[in-house]
Image 1 (tube, rainbow, N blue to C red):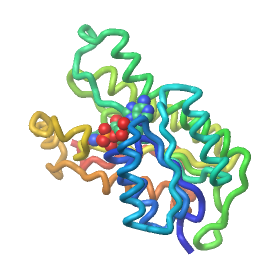
Image 2 (tube, protein in one colour):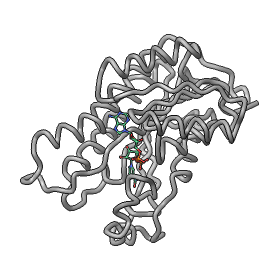
Image 3 (tube, rainbow, N blue to C red):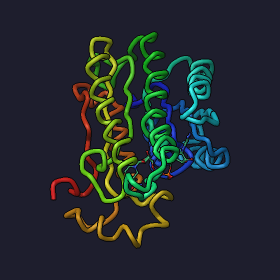
Length: 261
Ligand SMILES: NC(=O)c1ccc[n+]([C@@H]2O[C@H](COP(=O)([O-])OP(=O)(O)OC[C@H]3O[C@@H](n4cnc5c(N)ncnc54)[C@H](O)[C@@H]3O)[C@@H](O)[C@H]2O)c1
């Protein structure tokens, strides 16, 4: 039996970590996948990659702006109307740091970054959890009790440690870690698991244009290389699966050792 008999929903699915996660769900046997992003052409690209990887997989694309309440509710409504439920969620939609200190950051820039990275993640997890509260657990790979759903938010190593000229971004990711822990406490009794992943420097379209200036940050990590989107996706899939049935409220660091140095 597949580890993923239910429905996966991924935000930020048009690119990078979200795209790798969506394709990984398909490769690992998940047969119903909802792709959400504001970038419609990228959603088409991810859908094509899924069809190449697993032709029988059913894909639903929903163009979504995670910073808008109505858009997020529309996403979950569409997912439920097509597939009946939402079991494994990866909230990966996010934007890069503006690379300014607080004194140079405008309130609009602060709100834009936090409106997507923190409030947008919260809007998504809020709507997803509301749906999960209405559904029963699915059977698991080895018969252990299942969950009504599993949410994985994408935070960052920069939610754990600081970095020069990134207060808006670092704050947005620290907020995601804190929100994840609070939701994990609140929804344990409802049999919903909520965790986050904290990637280090990962080679994606977000970082590629800046890889030369990211050299010193990469070197802080003992492993001294950027990670791949696949290496993050692998951790998301573990946390979503019934093999992680006792993992709750964790912030799984996937950073080549950056935060231990
Ligand atoms: N790449 C890294 O080094 C790294 C490190 C730590 C954390 N992260 C986090 O991982 C997540 C994915 O980043 P990535 O590296 O794959 O970047 P990416 O730019 O490749 O993908 C991000 C996706 O989010 C989408 N998006 C942005 N704003 C949106 C909105 N308002 N509504 C819907 N979709 C929106 C973009 O269209 C894009 O497809 C982000 O939350 C990012 O902060 C990335």
